[in-house]
Length: 513
Figure 1 (tube, rainbow, N blue to C red):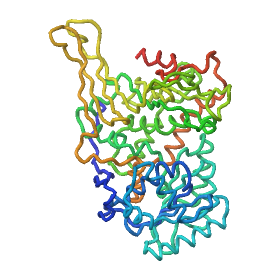
Figure 2 (cartoon, helix red, strand yellow; figure 1 turned 45 degrees about the horizontal axis):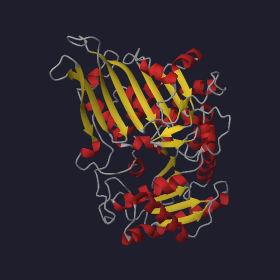
Figure 3 (cartoon, helix red, strand yellow; figure 1 turned 120 degrees about the vertical axis):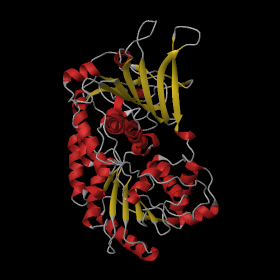
Figure 4 (spheres, rainbow, N blue to C red; figure 1 turned 90 degrees about the horizontal axis):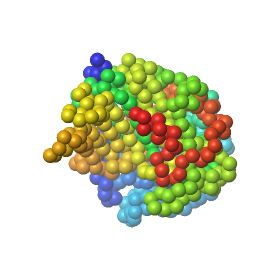
C-alpha cells in the first residue's frame, strides 16, 4: 500500500581512497576544483579536534587539489609558523605522528591572519591576502568560507563578508559559506540569522553543517530503505508498530557546563541530530537522489509532524537531568556538580519526545526520539519495531515483534532480529542477521567531517541542512522549549543516575511498547 518505487540512485560519496600519510601525490577526487579555504575560528576547539585533521587527511588522500590554499583566521596573535605548529599538534593528537615530508607539503598550503570578526578593517586585509594567494597559486577564484565560530558571531561574520563581497573573487569562480550548528537557539533567532545570511549569500551557496549527516550509516539509510524490497514494502503503519531514535552518550558535559546551561539536550542534540534521523526515517521516496529532491522530501515529512500541545508534552515527553552515579566502573559527579553549572540547575540533559507524523504512511505510529548524557552506553541508532507476527507463538503463548536496527555509532551496521524455535524445545529463541559496515572491502576510515568537507568542495549539498528544514525543526520543538522553561513540577530532579538508562518515566513510556 505504501511502498514506493525506488528512486534513481546517484551517490554523492567519493570512492574510497588510500589512508597512508605518504599519498599526497594521489589523484584528486573527481569534481573537486582548487579553492581558497578560509577557516574562521581556526584556533578553536572544533578546528583543532575535527577540521584540521580532516583537511590533512583530505590532502593526503587526494581529495584536495595541489593548488588549494588554507587560511586560518582567528583573533589569536600568531605568526604563520606558530599557526602551522598549532595545526601539526592538532593533527598528531587526532591521527598520531605524521610523516615529515607529508607534513611539509601540507604546511606549505597553510596561512594565517589575525582577524577580529567584528572589525571591518580585518576583512579588508583578508581580502587582500586571498587575492594574493589566488594569484600566486593559480586558484581560479573559488572560495570556501567556514564559520567555526561561537553561534553569536555567525551574523556579524556573514555581514562583513557580504559587505566586501569576499565570497566573490575578481577572477570569478564560486563562493560557499559553511555555518556550524547550532543554527540559532530558537525559531525567531534561526529566522533572523537566515535573513542576515541571505542578504549576501543565496541559499544554494550556504552549507549548514550537521556532522551527523556525514556518518556512514546515516548516509546509507536511504540506500538501504529504497534499494531493498526486504525493507521498503514494510516501511509503513500496516507493519511498523513504533520507531525508536536514540542518541545516547556516556559522557557528561565535558567542561562545557556554561554552554550546556544555555542549550540543554533539546537544543544540543534533538533539534538537529535526532530530527535529521527522524526525517530520513519518515520521509517518502524523493523524486531522485539529487540534493534538492532529498531536501524537499525531508521537509515534507517534518511539516507533517503533529504539533506538541501542553497535554501531549505532559503525557508523551520526558525531561531529565543526571545525578551522581557510576559509568564504566568509575564514579562520576552529577550535572549540578559540573563546572559552570548552577547548583540548582533544572537544565535538561535527557529528553524523550514522542513524535507523530500525520501522514497515510505513519498514522498511529509513534516515533520515540530520545537523547541523553551520562547514560549506560554510547549508542546512536534507529530501531524499527514491526508489529506482532500473525499467529503469535505457534504452540506457545504471547507474541513477538521483529526489530530492524540501523546502528549509526559505534560499530556502524544493520541488524535484523527475528524469532526462531529453540533447538530441542517449543520455546521461542531470538536470532539475528548482522551486517557490519567495517567488514566491507574498501570501507575506509573517513570521518564525518572529511566526507562533508569533500562534499562542500564538490558543491554537493545533500548531506547539509537547508534553511526551511532548520526553521521547521525549531518550530516543532518551540512548544517543548517553552513548556520546559519553567522548573520541573516533580520533586527529585535530577531524576536519573549517571550510568543508568534514563528517567523512570521515559522507561515506562518505552517499556509499555
